[in-house]
Length: 350
Image (cartoon, rainbow, N blue to C red):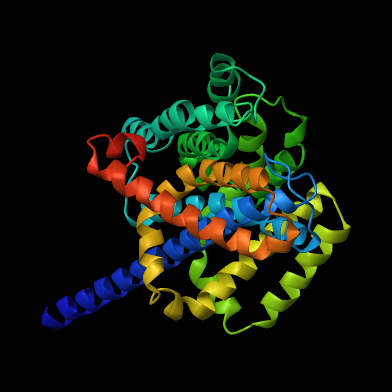
């Protein structure tokens, strides 16, 4: 009996250790992806097509923007799918669908409407980035979610969560490879859907959520395969560079996103023991959701002043670095201030 108890304790400790490692990996991915989102939202202003405020074109920043955009938002959705799998399969959460829906509504949709109406809309109208008046902006871009700026992610993720949770049991009993291929084709044709209620985004990113779910279920095998194969990263980055610079194909871009996610995950596996020791990592980990909520409008305001004072390409590097630093600090400061108020749980979903 004593031996059996010891075996159970060792087995339990091993499972707990594996779960902690999983959580750590997913947290690191969220932190790195948050940083990439902020970087891409800055470099985009100097890329072809530009950001909300037109700046001078720069090839290097255009390339960085395309490179990061090729996989960073699919990765955000993918890690959400992995965490969903971890919670429902390992932690045995989300058994009550009603409570699950309420929790996700508070976590995602309440911040969506509050930040959209009281933060995004005023900045968009004040800087005259939109031609709509405040009432029409709220109706068209927040309620109908035609152009909710960065908040599209919250709307999309909420409905993906609900859809996946509704069909979770059927999914488990079905041919998951067939469903994955089906979602791939749905993603491929998602741009044919109307641009309302984020139907395009939901249809496009369901594939990546499913991919994240399967990644969590097979994480151990994937880690064993990756091992110390650093060449995967090199070949992957080369492939992505070729695609984003020379080729546009919707199916190929879906594959590029998958390769980009795999390469970044491999980089994180190799360097995570160093990443978690960086002091700023813990700050971003704590405030990552708030940083995502608040950073774009800060960037808009800063670029408005950069444009007004005429800082050209001569000051490009200084401008980008300063905007990145100010944006990160200001976003975390906003989160800190909101946490001091009684509305912290409401606004940032905590």
